[in-house]
Amino acid sequence: MDWKGWKGRIGPWLGRCRYALLVLLAGLVLLLLPGGGTEPARADRADGADVGDAFDVTAMEEKLSSALSKIEGAGDVDVVLTVQTGPRQIWAADRRNEAGSPGGTTEEETTVVLSRGSGLEETVPVQQISPRFRGALVVCSGSGDPSVRLALKEAVAALTGLGADKISVCQGT
Image (cartoon, rainbow, N blue to C red; front, side, top):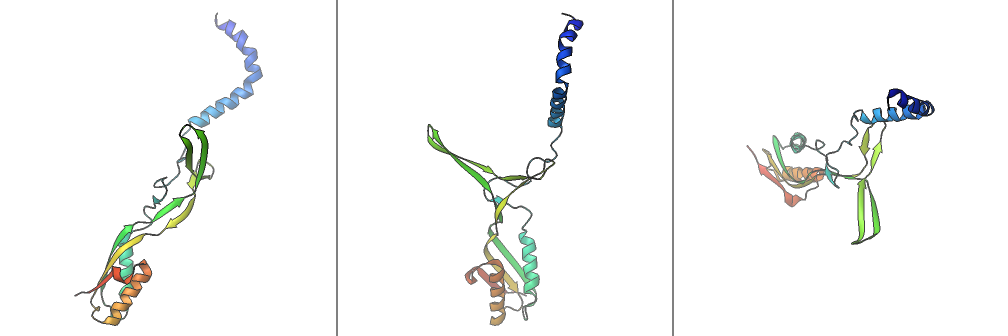
């Protein structure tokens, strides 16, 4: 069959379905366009993912040193912190149990994502867990005075959540 034969058969059909074909063609074009950030921005989808840049131990140490040096009699203060676990976020998740599988029940978990339009998606944090400190070392020139030692230990304990047995205050030069 030649071109005129196909044109005679397809022509009337194209006339009836032209709007549906235009919508289908527009949909295909939209599917082929780049998503522009359709993947949610997060460090990790796992439960308790790391927050990343939200917490910096060095910055915390400098901030503590600056604050503690303002305590009367403390003098120049240096602080060293050890971190047991960094900050984490727990994401909202949908859990679905399905019965009837050969092995019993299966559990499926998916992370909840909010769609902000234009292909932007954002995860839903349920809880943010602060970092957990292991210990602190405070070195200062005025730690020979017991009242200064006590004030330094109380301040570090209040800011880090550490017990007094996990904070060491030493005499510096």
